Length: 220
Image (cartoon, rainbow, N blue to C red; front, side, top):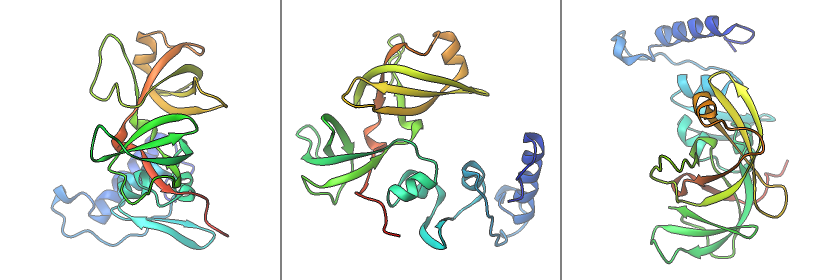
């Protein structure tokens, strides 16, 4: 863990040294990259440096592959949790969407969601599913964007936590039970629109980024 216990500036310097030393910066023309095993608990560090990621737990390999695949298409709930995904839920596959051939309908405890390209799950199959916080879209009535009407959900801002240039948002849905989504908003958006805890709002879940997984955790 080469950047453990370092301040932010030192972390950046060490990462730049790693990139140069290993040949990961192919544009530098320093020859072929060297093989390096990097052990880290920092997901951003792993995603930035690695061309292959291995998720380990209790001495077992749970999943390996390209970082983007592992992070956004985890094999199951356990992997999703270990790579830092917070929006992990249960659902039941309803069947193909009548509006699009490449879409499935997902029953999320009474809320119907559209999922793009989720093949291999039969109607009635219980599943776990997840969506990255980056694929939850904050709807702005003054500036609609593509995807604003995909899986549109209403609720309220339950919590706002400032984290440097972004704010971590806990969004409580207008739905039975305590169902919350977790995502981030740029700090300038929060300030410009005066977003506060308790505000009502609408968010959208991008259908192409909802990922279905087999239900249940792995046996020990």
